[in-house]
Image (cartoon, rainbow, N blue to C red; front, side, top):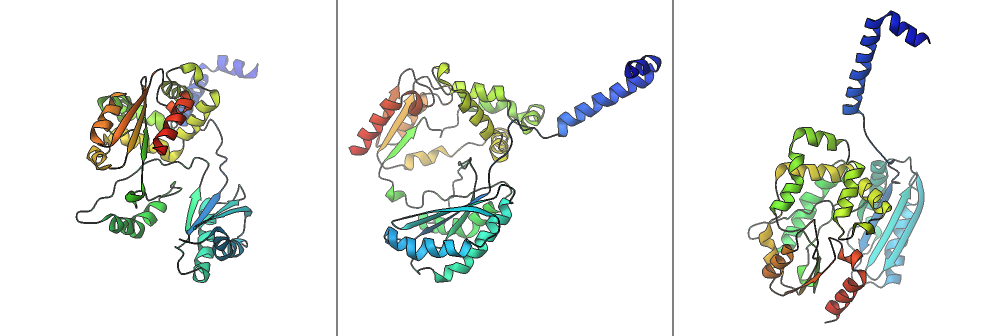
Length: 338
């Protein structure tokens, strides 16, 4: 063959080409993006409006319908879904797959802003949020202020924090929690995180090394997602392939992986002193064979939360709601009926 003949006649030339190919391969490995599954999230924008005290039919006519009419003319909309409940209106706008999510959200915000004046005075300002199929909370941040009440902290967050975080690239949604702690009548903790331990730190320790972190910057390997899923169960045979794939896709989303790496490198963990502030009746459910968060944490929660009880399932790991579905369901029903 011509290539082999040239290589034999010109060994130096062949060696140089081989070295160039090797160098290009190393460079490509370091710089090319890696995605095992394509990103197929359609651009979706949600609009949520509260109208306290209004019946569902009033919410429909006074909130949902006017907003739908106003946003219907936005370019690139594939379809609009809405629901009206007592005191709340929810509208979901799905755009064509090629439409830019940032442009879509801005177009919707413009239309909604122009419709605010026609809404009832008692209604809150519509909240426009970007959504994706993995719209899960990545991180909760605690906001505290000396001498400030919960309503004051909530108002500060809405005025100065939410908009700034929403503008960060990759942020789909910013939620505010804990605005009305008095409305939480009962609390359930299922193998919950909350305490910094050597076990957790050890699991994240390898990410502090730049060489390791650089590899994971390119994506979470499938074998690690499989290992992580298996560690969630006391019985590894219950791990389903689709759950491993879903876990891998979720882990490789830009925000999720970046946060995990940042947490590992910062060695910062939640403020555990806040746990003792919980006053409502609390049910603590744990799997005895939990490999993610040791079962000893259940007793720490019980000790710090005065009005609490602990339920520990044997032959169960980090996901009692899956491994012990019936028992967990019965325990929750009993707890909420008491």
